[in-house]
Length: 242
Image (cartoon, rainbow, N blue to C red; front, side, top):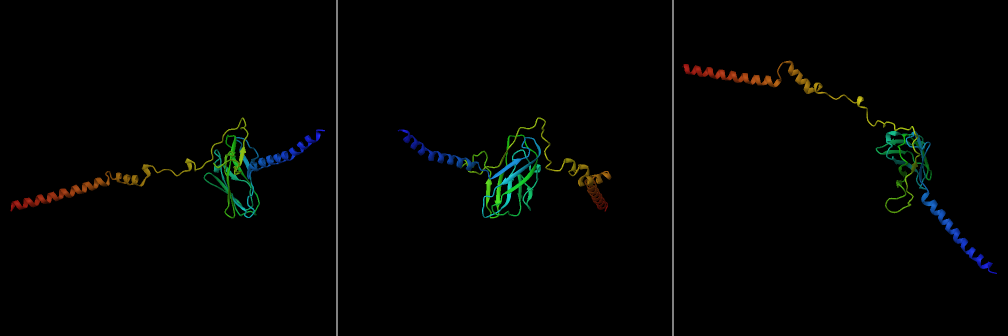
């Protein structure tokens, strides 16, 4: 006799459970969605010649992506990165703190996938690649937030930088020498030594005569003074004799 009320209570709770489950799914899917992702063929600390593949989703239905500007994480220098593959007509340019890949605008809504090869990954647990994504209409999406902390205005904004997790380094892995950023010292122009400078060569020419030019000038002045004094003395004696 009392089974019916219990059944009605269960029926009332079913819509509430369904709504709660749908809300949880939406909350989990929203902030977790990554707009720029990165993966590697050998995501391990100190791994060498690693290919990183980036996938950037288009966030515009009216303009095409034209450029991706990437700030490299600490431990990877721009000189250690070379271009792999990318959209047709796009090129790679290294900068002071990272690199840029870009070219003709893609179709509106079309995603971008490209790859680079890194000389060696640093000895760390994860790498964040802050990315600025530009469009043909001037729009720029900034995927630069770290650790889900946002930019000081809250959490879960969905602007996180792509992050690559790394496994521990292999037991025999060793850091390679840094890539050269300037010509080696041996190839630099030889520094001018004092003996080969123009001033030194002039002094050497003066030394060939035994005395410097200054010394010869002083001798000439002294000779003129002596000659003048002699003439004056002769004139005085001639006047006294008259």
